[in-house]
Amino acid sequence: MGCLVWEVGTGDPEAMESASQPPGHRSIEQVLDAAFNRLTEALRVTEDQLRFGDLSQIATPPLARRWQQLRRVAGALRQQLEVDSGPLSLHRNVEGDLLRGLPGSGPHGDRNQLIRTNICRAREAARSVEEAIRYFCPPLCGEAEAIRYQIYQLESLTEGILHRGPKLDGRHLYLLMTEELCLGDILETTAAAIEGGASMVQLREKSLGSAQFLQRAQQLREITAERGALLIINDRIEIARLCRADGVHLGQQDIAPHQAREILGPDAIIGLSTHNPQQASAAALAGADYIGVGPIFETQTKRHRLAVGTGYIGEAHQQCELPGYAIGHVDEETIDEVITAGATRIAVCSGIIARPDPRGAAQFLQQKLVECASREVSDGHLR
Image (cartoon, rainbow, N blue to C red; front, side):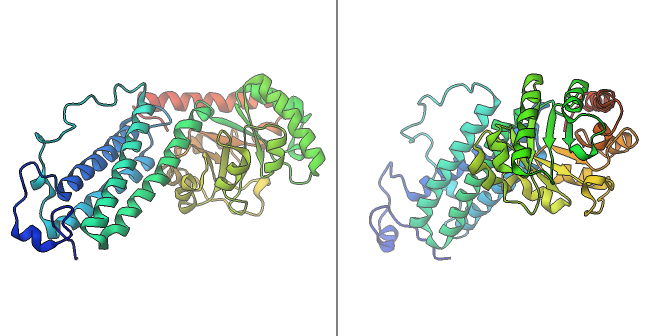
């Protein structure tokens, strides 16, 4: 492999072979041993907190798996180094550590701060590992660098969940509003649905011009703000920004979520439609905050797309660390089947807005979700 083991500062491998290290010498192996320890320890703490967190948005197995895989990659890199150099722990000198015994970083304010602190520790340790490997074993430098960049990527993903995830807590009934399918007045129907339990509203109008769309969005912004519901705009990022919506929902053919965030800012909620496990798995790294899961059944709003079936609900949950809203002809007739398949959040259009009593329709669906959530908590887990 070409790893070099010599005394720091001599630049001469033969000098290492001919001279013993003086007492207290801190070799590059000690640096690597300490840095790898900090790296894998910090990755493990992060993994465990995301794996065994309390019953909230933060306890997400797919995200924990990403950190777990990175920890294993770091461990494998250490093993590669030790093939030539032998165990790095043989060079460990705990008693001789000049910083041993100094105060640590202090108490963590909450679990989120604990996670952020350890991600920061992992990032710093990864840089230390990489720089030491540049000197100790240059052929493996690229692998060390890749670990550091994966930490950057996962840090951004995790921070998004910690920062924006709480905005979605408790929001399980998502209203999709399209005026042409609305049985009554669109504004009255929206207000009634929110009063019935819908806590998110998406304005989806494909035929309105920009001026009309903006006017309608501003009207819904007022209604949702007064009632504590989130307003999401379908596709039209400029409309979302102008009406000060809470976010935007994008399709697979629209611009990427991270690009939309450059326009809307770090606080915006960005949803992404997904139709298969591969798209669900990629959503979080793409910058989404939640996913649409479907269409579960054939629907009037997605005539061009085949239904994916209820089996995709469980697949999406396994593949994606984000909240998922089952969508596609979810109503009073299909809600039990959707919940049985694993859904705890649903996005509903005609099942509410095309009903004579939109408030009652929303209330019925919301009660089903509340009952489902109660069972999930009693079983010891919450999606």
